Every structure is written in C-alpha cells, then in structure tokens.
Image 1 (cartoon, rainbow, N blue to C red):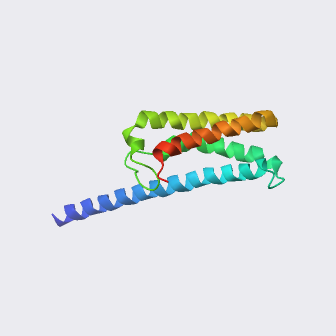
Image 2: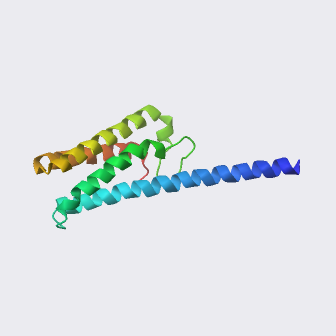
Image 3: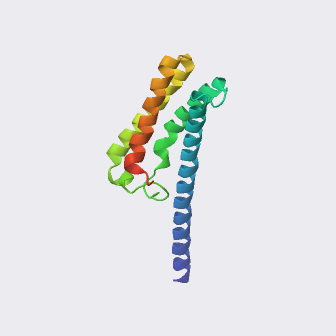
Length: 139
C-alpha cells in the first residue's frame, strides 16, 4: 500500500510540474511575442534606425504564431490564461488562427518593404492580438 501511495504522489508531483512547465513555457513564448511587437513599434515610430531588422521580427512573429496553439494544452490553466480558453475552445482556436494569418500577412508585408502595406498589416496583427487578449487573458 505504501508503494502505491508513493507512486500516486510521484504522479501528482510530475503532473503539477508538467503543468507549471507548460505555463512557464507559454508565458516565456508570449513574452517573446510582446518583445518582437515592442521592437517593431520602436522601428515603426522611428525610435531606432534598425529598419533592416523589421523582417527578422516579422519572421519571428510568424514562427511564434505557428506554435501558439500548442501553448495551451488541456490542463495547463494558470498564469494570465483565463479558463475561458478551454471553455470556449472553438472561439479561442479561431482567434489563434486569426493571429497566425495576421502574422503571416505582416511577414509578407515586411518582405515587400512597402510601408503602404506594412502599416495596415501591423494594425491587423495588433487587432488579432487584442482580440484574443480581450477575451482570454487576465490583465
């Protein structure tokens, strides 16, 4: 009986550690998204002259958007993620898809080098981020 209790306790500890790991990983990844968005804003506002870095940030955002659905596995509630993510999974999935589409659109616009495309694509990306945060992120 002691052995079974020890095994059960170890399983619970591993599950808690895995969940904490998922939350930490999600938060670190989403912080990276925020970092890239902040760097892009600095470039676009002319705070820095690193316009040649815009494509690097756009590529990173598109890559991060591609993995975003994997950041929210069932049972990984915590951090800034609201329970509504798992309660309304279809809407959340649609918002993640919009994020991916917007990030890909921004990547293409950045590659064009045409500010007439870059500005609107960045606004679309910002709206995709806001759309998800408004419903699914604790502020």
